[in-house]
Length: 186
Image (cartoon, rainbow, N blue to C red; front, side):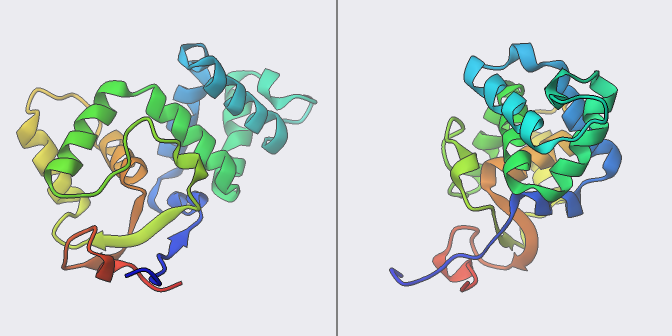
């Protein structure tokens, strides 16, 4: 349907689905492993922190100690969609094995998913349609059945599903996740 529009919500809407503790854990992982990121991604994260995070006593918040940077970044993550997207892109890069498995899982279930290496920060946000048959629980169960030896945290699996699929489970739908009839008109 050429004239069909897809509804998106900004990336920071993800905060409605995350506990504050898990949000801080994601930020801590990204900031503590900055040197493991590609030079470009590290630069983008540092620029986002410098521009969007306020840490009292630091003109450049990217130079603040980890605990202070995480605390300040949690506010930016909750309010700034571009900042949220940069952090999630860095987190994706730091989790190559999990991203590969979740990608395989979603593709195997018929989801149309961008390639792992696609720059999701260029998207306008998350789509809001989610198939009812693929709840977090069902997808988690399917992940566990496919990789019973996995030690990935359930929150990490769920976040990877959301980020790779570009979807938040706002509107549960009975049909296929990528059926054009599923998307709301904007």
